Image 1 (cartoon, rainbow, N blue to C red):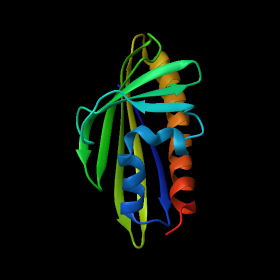
Image 2 (cartoon, rainbow, N blue to C red):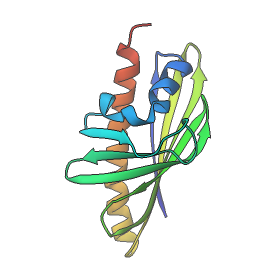
Image 3 (cartoon, rainbow, N blue to C red):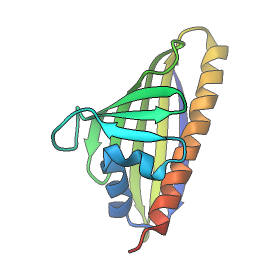
Image 4 (cartoon, helix red, strand yellow):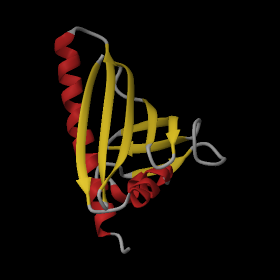
Amino acid sequence: MATTASRATVAAPVETVWEALASFADISRWSRTVAQSSLLTAGPPGPGVTRRVQVGRSALRETVDEWEPGVRIGYRIEGLPAVVRSAHNTWQLAAAGEGTDITLTGAIETRGGPVVARLVAGRVGRANEELVADLAAHVTRRPA
């Protein structure tokens, strides 16, 4: 399994960052790479909630399996190319003075050897870097 980690520190409180992440269906509002997003399940936010995201020509399903308000949200990603056996993203938040440290960890298991795993992890890492940068831009330009 290959892992990636993308980080940023933003001048926004944890509550503001969590609000953006916890609005699970709304990722297309702040991510430049997600053209559309919507919930596929009903009910309160938390474990088991599934969203559909459109990234380029790919329609992905992301299902929450970790939910610790203000601290962590993790989700399984399905619908990636067949070379990917499993993929998971975990957002972690921590107070940093009056701001927030954001970490997005990606874990990916692939079919094929270590070269394939490195290539796929590189693509996932770049995509997650963009997600972190987009979230950081979104939460810092929001009115207080």
